[in-house]
Length: 195
Image (cartoon, rainbow, N blue to C red; front, side, top):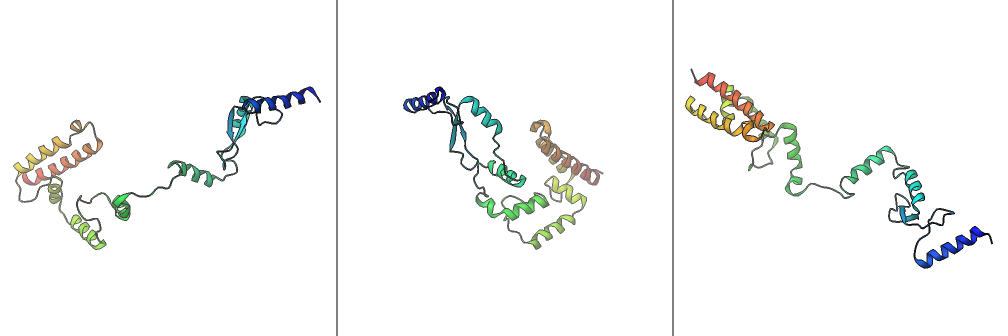
């Protein structure tokens, strides 16, 4: 029996007796302390390698080997939810069509109002909206209804301007856009009422 063969037999016998693993790489008798998955389909089955062979294995192992681009994309997307299915929660799942319509046509719904409007009701509301004059639009922006005078308009403008000013809202862009809308409405009403 050759010396190296006798050593291999002695080392593996000693290793199994002591409770340590031998490296799974052929012709290696070092201690197999580092685990590496055997395949993508069995990630809980491991090869046990010494540090040198674990590094070699990791350099050459490709988790996505043999998969198409579409399969890789699907795998990455499933990983974003930890391989678990996702679905809409609560009442929002039942109102998915309603929400999609609102996203496509603007968030013009009022809170507390029933979401199940028919198409006719939606079109009628759009016609009413389109039939408004510039003055009516401006009054709606300031949440005023006729009859009003310029003193009421000015007081409401100041109240809304303070409320939506970006300095009062930490530089919020939405508040800034709302303030621009309020300013435009005020200038429209000023031209109509401040004569």
